[in-house]
Each structure stands twice: as C-alpha cells, then as structure tokens.
Image (cartoon, rainbow, N blue to C red; front, side, top):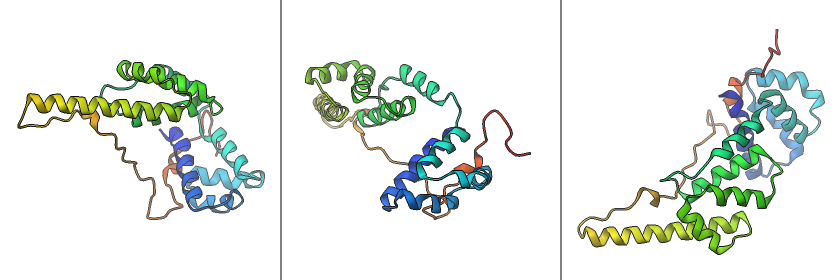
Length: 204
C-alpha cells in the first residue's frame, strides 16, 4: 500500500543522497523534485516549518504513515521465521528491517536474539555454539554453516547421481535489488503520488 511505500521511499532516497555525498542542509533544497501529488502539496503547505532534514523526515512519516506502523511491524517480527529455502543473507536483511521498523532504537543484543531465535533449527544450533556477540558475527557464522551444508548436500547428490549434479534451492544467496529510480531521473521517485493521509481528508 501507499503508506508502506513512504518508509521504503525514504530509505532509497537517503541511500541516493549518501551515495552522491549530499549534506543534510542541501537535501531540503532537492526534495521537492522527488514529490508528487498530495505529498508535494503537503510539502508546500508546511515548508516554512520544515527547518531541517530531520524535521522533514519526522513530519513526513507522521503525516503519511499509519500510527500503528511500529506495532504492526513488531507483530510481524514476532511471527517471522526463516523459510525452508530462504538464504541466510535474505533472512538476515529481512529481520533487521523488521527490527528497525518495530523499534528504531532496538539494541544490538535484542536484534541478535531475534536473529538467533528465528533462524532454522539446524543453523541456529550451530551458530549458538559459536556464541556470536553481534549481528555481524551472526551473519558470518550463519553463512559459513549454510555453505557447509550446501557443500555436504552437493557431495551427497554427486555420489548418488554420478551423471547429474543437484544443487539445492537454498544454494543461491544472491539478492537482486529492485531498482527504485523512475523516469531516468536519480532524484524522482513516483511512489509518493499514491500516498494518502491516514484517517482524514487533508484537502477540501
């Protein structure tokens, strides 16, 4: 939905600005080129109060995201587990994304607990033996264990079927990002034009 797009759009835009080494002071000068429809009207109506990039981000989220966004993300995080054919890299990124949405100030230790508790039992057991203390260490250990399992499966399949090599679907750990640039312009993202203000009609 449109409201879910706001957070993703901001993340993509922040990444773009950081890649271009654009300081916060200049971001507000460029942001109007990335807004369309109601989002642009909202910006024009509130421009005088948007005194910094931090204020802009805060007010934009307040205006265009559900007040229950964090609660919904927390509930999703609670029930989330690694899929049977889901790679460790994809699982790791999804859990940290949900952690950030549920609580932007979540501690490293809590993130690590979520990763450990929600990964597949076979990998979880081996990773716990390594006693990781950070999310980065979790990823390093989990990837190594995943690759060892894959090598073991390939070896078994190779011995069983001498003419055919079967690689399990979990062998792919490459995540292909979806481009979020529109109309060939690095500063234009069309998603905001589909946003709707929650609970009430802002414009008469």
